[in-house]
Amino acid sequence: MDIQNEFRIGMRKYIYSVSVISNTQSNGRKNAITVSSVTSISINPPSIIVCINKKSSIHESLVLDSKFCINLVNEEQQDIAEVCSDPNRINERFKNIEWIGDKPPIMKNALVNIICKVDKIVEYKTHSIVIGLVQKIKNSEHKNPLMYQEGVYKKSV
Ligand SMILES: Cc1cc2nc3c(=O)[nH]c(=O)nc-3n(C[C@H](O)[C@H](O)[C@H](O)COP(=O)(O)O)c2cc1C
Image (cartoon, rainbow, N blue to C red; front, side, top):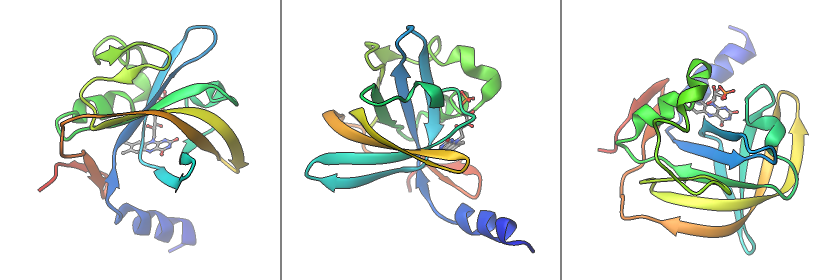
């Protein structure tokens, strides 16, 4: 088997927590896509990375100093994760999902909303690594994140 297939199989074994990254670009267009590539960098300053495919709809709008929100999806929000990862359902993302505000849009009922400013973008091949400087955090009472492993969504046990 070639190394790309071995890599794909290996990476599918990880358990990922599912987030949606959301923003509003300068022309008013709103974007939201499902991501698993969220990792904190440092506590001082609070900072976070997310890896974004250059072909995704949100990519071009993630410019320096622009705001975005990382919304950690709760285990009852699988339908939201599905809408935000299906290119054919792009028009549903701001109709059928509840948001608060739009600068950036903040998802209702997420475990945590992490509002960031784009501090740095590192391009790497097919993706950009977006480094966000955290501006504000909204923690909720929801306890359990939606998870993803082997291509399947899972609830917490
Ligand atoms: C569980 C899961 C995790 C994902 N993680 C990422 C990610 O970290 N970065 C990324 O660019 N796309 C990721 N995707 C793929 C995007 O959600 C998908 O390509 C989406 O359709 C892109 O948005 P668009 O349709 O508006 O272009 C993930 C998809 C799923 C189902």
